[in-house]
Amino acid sequence: MIEVQQKNDHKHGSFEASIEGKKAGLMTYTWAGEERFIIDHTEVDEAYNGKGVGKEMLIKAVEFAREKGKKIIPLCPFAKATFQKNEDLQDVL
Image (cartoon, rainbow, N blue to C red; front, top):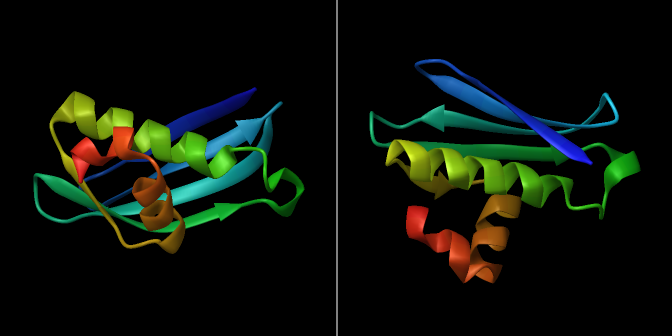
């Protein structure tokens, strides 16, 4: 099972994924004002490629944005492509 933890401060944040206690991926973001944040980087450990780690982190970012009434600017190529493929996530763009 993929677990995702969020770290957040006034300028930056991240969603860190782990599987069975081992780091599986990292998605970083930067705040762009009070109302939106930019997903600027996504990486998945090679051992976990193709296991949905990146998408799980993006889903957590979308849930966070919905809960807080924020918008997401996906500059990271992975995040941008995943948003394009999943209309159900696009309400936070």
